[in-house]
Length: 399
Image (cartoon, rainbow, N blue to C red):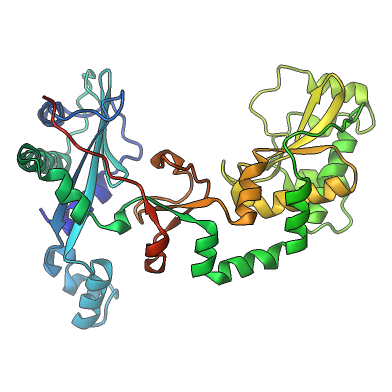
């Protein structure tokens, strides 16, 4: 097996919409053989989580693609371009892979470099998904595990991995101020979006709890706050009313908030306390995925209503800071959950998580132990001397 061939198999076998009940008998037989071997390894967690690292040679250019076909399709004009394409995609002679396995009851899951290639219900009798390429890959993994056992029995496996597993495949941490030191333009870009004066104001006044309260709340009052938020962060306002801005820019699933009277605190209280509301996003004023949306919540206690932002949405730290400043200066009750996350980022005293190129740098805090970063980047060689690397797992055989 070569890296080119394995990458090809992974690319076509990566789980997308496969039903875990559909794997055929031959695949399950090979999975059982593989898991019987893996049973000799000490698990790293309660779900029988196990890890093995292995390396493969790059492979020959003939495995990479058919030059004549690529030329005919217009992908390359000559053989030199073909070679350049090959060397660009595979610049190294050796490539490393991390295989992980888990099991829960009758389910088995195998991933390679964070890409899941098998998720099978071993008790299912459907047996409709017969895949020879998957069988080939499982045969390779069975052989590879046996090879790893040789070094494990010799007591040399972990040293070999620690000494040879490339840093570009590892997880690490870099202090944000050190990151700015290496890449000063990143800090400059930040200050182009929010001034140092604004940052200082935010650090001084932003808090997790506010003592201010609004006695009676209406939807119109909320829309006015939302309109101020949009104006503050530079959204196009034109001649739209606050409610029209909310309908234009917010998530849209407002659970009827836009239909009640804007002046009636009674109607708002009825809507707010209606437990039948479910599944909507009335507070999502800036749309985005789970890590990038901004929610402007209305919270309530015995003393009245107040507004809240979520500081863990660090990808939106500039918008959150600007919204807080505008509300605070306008005497609007505002607090921020997890506010220290954003404060530490502005101070440069937090850490960025470095993740392998094979991992999407969105939510990877589970890979880190000493600190739990909330922003993630890929490795740049200029950062090496400032990085604190996460230790690799210590792999042991059961006694």
